[in-house]
Image 1 (cartoon, rainbow, N blue to C red):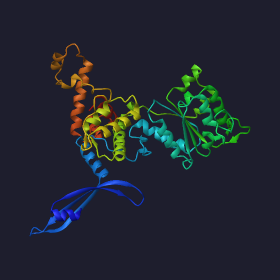
Image 2: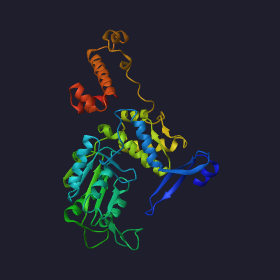
Image 3: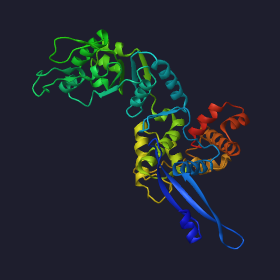
Image 4: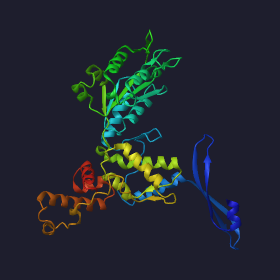
Length: 408
């Protein structure tokens, strides 16, 4: 490239695929700029190199800092597995949950994870395993809703040769056996048939498991993590789940909050997934501020899984030559963005507000309008919500809560 810049007497650039001695891969932009002497001849060639992922992040930060209250990319409070399993702890509920998970992880106590579908129960289970003393042993996962009863029993407990028609001639170890020394994670455990619930309870109490068709039991040492998107206590009341198993599982209950209740994590998660998919698909993309604002206002009924899928779709469907992702297509996020409240175009003068909509006018609505306008004006002049709270003589958490409420 330097030779090409020397021959053509102009700046040239190329993109290289770099592989480090340890096998790490990244793309690199190299720019060669000829430097001329007083006689118009090239004295030397300056070559600059920068990794594209770093260039993208720098550009992203420049975009975000157009807004003085921009949210930064996830930092030390973010934990992930590199494949879209991100635990972002910017919000108070997630910080409390991670603190409790870290405290519990060092023990062998059974953990019951509950939360809505897509909220990140599987990721939390992985985090607990990785930070436990069993981290160097396997994490064995099974979704109890994905298999019929007969197959689920064979998968969990294993079988001896000839135990049933179609069984392997060598027999097969069950997942409980496979988890010996490690962690067994039973997802959607509320879908487990009552008969198997009784067998699982016996294994948990005796720490022994017997394959189908076997005579003797095997001693098993494993740590159990279970997850459910239903209220297991309500399932017990309906007779759909064994009470004794519920109490055996409910040693340490952890509830994973839905994404709508941890809005401080939405933008950091979106940026985490953007970085993940840019690396996976070899793209270089950034979100415009209006896209992140749209993410922030949406309620995410599909939780983190929905956010992850939306970000992947935006990355792969945006034009490859376009750097900025500037809008969200209408089919995503429940259609067109919600219209801005009519009050936002009102002046603060009460008589003008009343004349604009006499039927909708109220003291409460007018006071909210005044509060929103005051908060918006103060936030524009302040570099942080802490500074705004100081001016408004209130605490920072109140400013953050009202900022989110009014979509500022």
